[in-house]
Image (tube, rainbow, N blue to C red; front, side, top):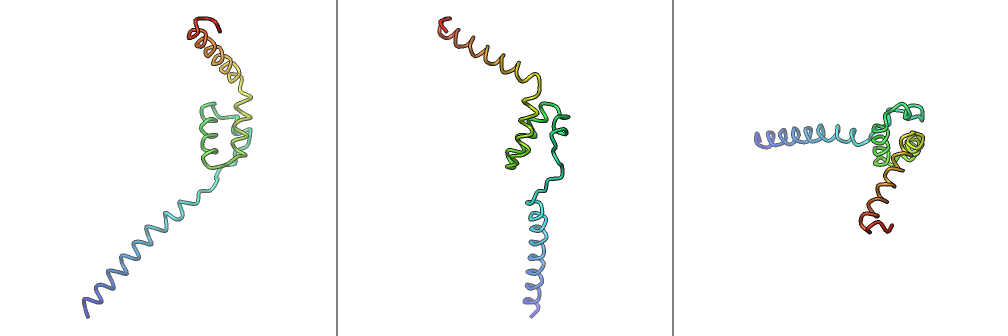
Length: 102
């Protein structure tokens, strides 16, 4: 009789521990958006932070935030110059590989 009672108590204790561990995990799996990412708020971030925010939005399938980040990045002045430099370097690399014929 005592063995049966002891096993029942152990089983009940184990089950309660299992549910205590499972409950916080169930709560953590449902993320909520705690920040309203307006265009003005995104524009106040550094370019590196905007890129990181965009990557996070893409991972979380938040298309509206991705679009706002793209708008802000497109308006940044250094973006056009950086693209022109990359294009020029690519052309120089092709020219070097082909012996200047490009």
